[in-house]
Image (cartoon, rainbow, N blue to C red):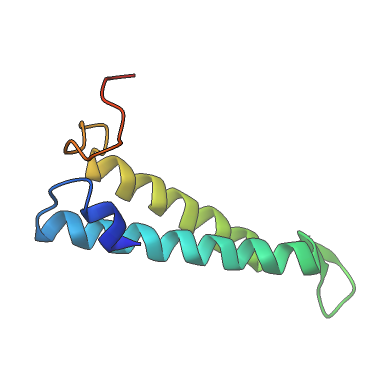
Length: 90
């Protein structure tokens, strides 16, 4: 994935680290979402009391870190002109 994105933008070493971190966060978020789909967002503790599934916290934290990393990358910049890629702004 990093190579595919790197073909469209010129990224320095720091940006590549941010991108790698963003992708790790995305992966962690998706794994937590899979657990929540299987087990639900509410579980019962050893006393039978309902409580928030710990994976909800993992999902939240990973999503927040993903957004922070993507904002830091500032990928709103126009990518390099690649053949077959449309030009223009928003």
